Image (cartoon, rainbow, N blue to C red):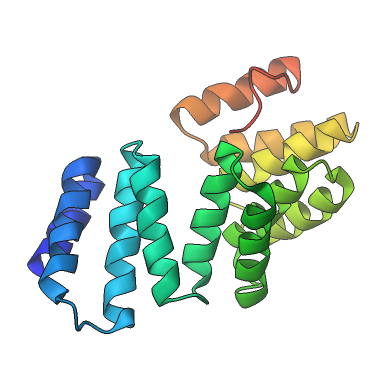
Length: 197
């Protein structure tokens, strides 16, 4: 790993995302045009994730596209790009297809399973979403986001008691705005104002 890539990691941990992206970009440039795809795509991916944190979606999307062209079967890229598109309501068919491919490539990854369940839920297939999200929650019981997604799907299906159980489980490890949103759900149920992003 280059010094610039290490610097990118440090800056990212400090939440200095634009500077982090710049350091990763410099690491990519130092690789040169003859770098192997397996050397290049991880740095492009890290640069993209830093830019996404800094709210630079068009640049993020372009870099993820470059990374995906180099490594079309990398579940982490497929999942990240598909989920980011899903969150923004962009090209939902493609977003779901990317996440489905990521899930097929990494079926035991609870985060990717969660992404698939959330994609299915966002597309209005609540019953299927509950099955997938339940599997994700069993795969990673400590991940707040998965339990929140499962709770939202259960609530929409009319299973309000089970939804409260999932939201309570999510609240155990949730932080900051996520914890506030979960408390609002426990107090008032699911509303448009407190729906998971």
